[in-house]
Image (cartoon, rainbow, N blue to C red; front, top):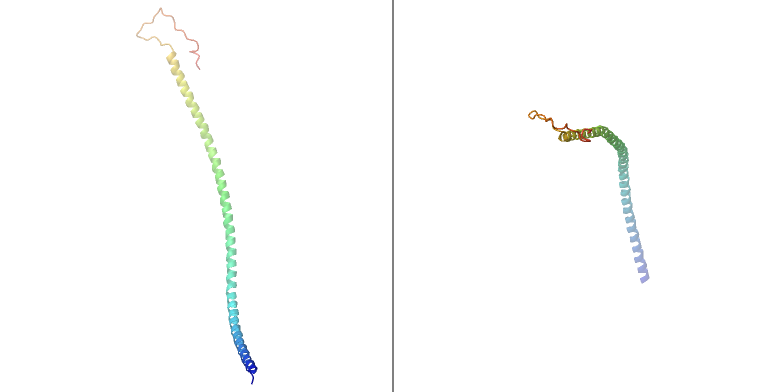
Length: 152
C-alpha cells in the first residue's frame, strides 16, 4: 500500500462525513424553515384581521374628523354672524345715544349762554329807583346805551 492510497482513503472518508454533515444540516434547516413558514402563516392570519380592523377604525376616525371640521366651519360662521349682529346692534344703539348726547350738550351750552347773557344784562341794566329814595325830578331819564337792549 502506498501513501497516495492512504491519502485517497482519508479524503474519501472526509468527503463522506462532510456529505452526512451537510445532509443533517439541510434537514435541520428544512425544519427551521418549516417552523418559520408556520409562524409567518400564523402571524399573517392574525395581522390581516388586525389591519382590516385598523383600516375600518381609521375610516371611522376620518369620517369623524370630517364631521368635526364641518362643525368647526359652522361654528366659525356662526361666530362671524354673531359678531356682525353685535356690531349692528351696537351701532344701532350707540347712534341715538350719540345724538342725544349731542343734543344734551347743545341744550346745556344754550342754557349756560342764556343764563350768562341774563346775568350780563342784569349787571348792565340801570337800577330802578328804590322806594326809600324819592325820585329825583331834576334827573334826566335813563338812556339806553347802543347795543345793550338789542341782545338776543
